[in-house]
Length: 119
Ligand code: FAD
Image (cartoon, rainbow, N blue to C red; front, side, top):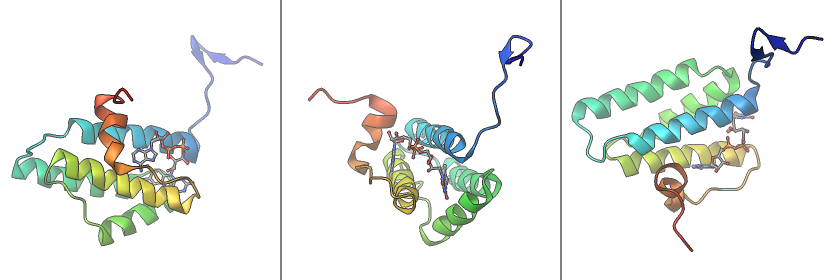
């Protein structure tokens, strides 16, 4: 069988795992570049982005749970660190549901922004 389409590999549509990993990469990276002191408009826009993201997330059962999570745990958009930690907590909520280990949210910035401290 031909495994290429033109010069591209014939890759399959993303499953829940591939979609999830890519989406967390995007979300945590957005937090990593969110301003440390966002304007009121940036805070409002970020809340709206998270709500729209949750509404259109292309895995319906993930989206359902994420929307519920947002309703009971309002996004903390006041600073870059508050957003990064809020996302980390949200990600941990999914980790818990899937039986994955809890990530230490004190380290979110090293993982997604600054790189690891020398130990
Ligand atoms: P991922 O969980 O994708 O994490 C990627 C990397 O992020 C990890 O290797 C680690 O370095 C880092 N990381 C891990 N935890 C944290 C954290 N708390 N904070 C910061 N960084 C962290 N899958 C389902 O099967 N059912 C669902 O209901 C579901 N809901 C989802 C909802 C959303 C909004 C998203 C974005 C994804 C959802 N997923 C769901 C996908 C799931 O969370 C994982 O992305 C997927 O299982 C792949 O897991 P992974 O082991 O590759 O690591």
